[in-house]
Length: 398
Ligand SMILES: C[S@@+](CC[C@H](N)C(=O)[O-])C[C@H]1O[C@@H](n2cnc3c(N)ncnc32)[C@H](O)[C@@H]1O
Image (cartoon, rainbow, N blue to C red):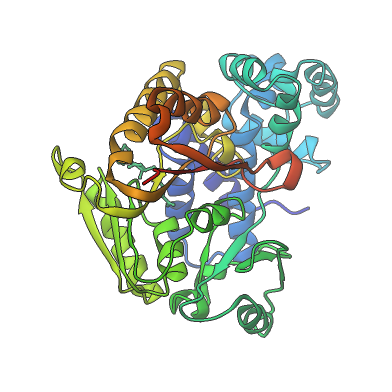
């Protein structure tokens, strides 16, 4: 394998930005890749994949390079190449690295789950306490590279049409069973550069995430509120399921996310969405007005660690405590926007019951006969290879 200095330097720069400046990995990589237009697809893949993998395996790499004293980002890069089975180039920067010592240290690393699976102590303890024996398998699955899944925008195309169109551009996909609009890429490609993406024929959306909007059982003509809409991944799906008919109100506390949502809606040909930044009286004013409400609440993101491995290093234990409180407040307050006879879906991208099942159980216990649980589901990285989502559909009886 031939290494190019400039590409390795780009990885070291990205790691510095992520770990020392606390910047988000995907944003850093996007910026780095934009900084040199001459890099080809293979170069870009090399930078992005190695940066993500080193972030993912940070704790394990820190352990296997521990004998070097104060290991540098370049040492982490070197150790990662060796563990992947690659040879290091004969650069002076790597002269002090002894492949046998790295491999021996890795044998030691394998003996401890926290090091082998590269996770902070406190998160490992919470995961084991909440999930028991299932934790180890989920944790392992959360360390695999996530597949790229597309959602065909049925306002413009179908999964079958899109599959054929992409194949004509050498982008090969398979339609996922049980998910009518989901196409999984057989091989990673930059789908964002295709005309089909620019024309809004698809969005990139994990298969687990694609199960949430259908659970809300929306129909054309309904009045639907997506109350934690963010940049609108699920809003766009809801609009497609509503055939662009009826009213879809997308709300969030962050106005800049709703701006991005509006941009995506234009690309998707979505015309029934209006956005609202949540202010102190917004929820009260909308009391009993919605046929359907989606609460895709803020969460730990522990179900999507495959895509955002940096979050496990940045998250702090007190964040989990605070976020559970916010989730419960959103569930109790925002559920009041549902009309009698209407439905609500509560969803998280977490594998922890304390953010998911337990919140719904507590809500149902406190609300008594005012709410009923209709359906509950989970997607599991270990079981089905999807990101880890939880979703529950509740109804407010007439
Ligand atoms: C899981 S993300 C939503 C992702 C989005 N639904 C999608 O599919 O792309 C949660 C969102 O909740 C928003 N949020 C945080 N606190 C909130 C609150 N109190 N009320 C409403 N939204 C809130 C965050 O800004 C974030 O955009």
